[in-house]
Length: 311
Image (cartoon, rainbow, N blue to C red; front, top):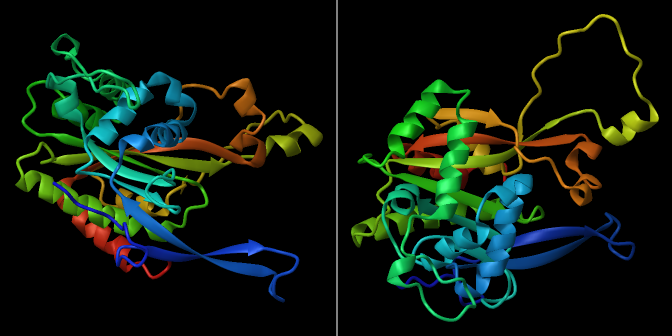
């Protein structure tokens, strides 16, 4: 499959956005408008390190639990499915990533271990083994889904060695300042590429899609509490459940079509360096929402993304 994405400046798949930045010398409204052309590309070997950085951001403090180098190799190895967004040409680093990996294929089918990008040599027959990264992710979602018996049972069934139905692991991450308007075209392209891959006999005929969406809820800022600690009370009051917010607004649409959802906290506390700039210092507690979505629902939600006039 040789699909080219947005290699020309005026390609119809380019998404042009207006970026607003405050400037003392700007107009009376205090804003400058900067037009940016976002170009869409297939994942490439040259993107290995940038993709690994995006995955590190995606998994947050739990990134240390996964073999991210191998996971990045799996992504760049399947250039027929998946999209990155760049702003300075094909050789620049991607600002966004959306792709899907076949969990069953990488868990249970013996395949050559990918050669790390930029290294010499190739994988040998003796190096063939199931994916370590995907095994770690499977064990992770098994652990995090235990509070939801229906979801846990379903995942055990779908990801078992004897399963006839396959699960696509959605990996979606972008820089925090990337506009949400870039998400719908990425999702449309992903659906098209999955269809083309299935038509060519490639293992992308997923029955379900699994996503761990980055979320957060508001908490009392620690920087305020340090200055003004509340006095302890004898009587405990019942507090309402905190509202969950999504870092990626389009994933809030996806949850409406999920067969199962489950919120969970990250396993690993932030390092000392990370804790100096932790979200909780500013009133945000990061978490994740696991979603299992049937394949028949994905086209419908992508259409909703495309038609959303609020973006």
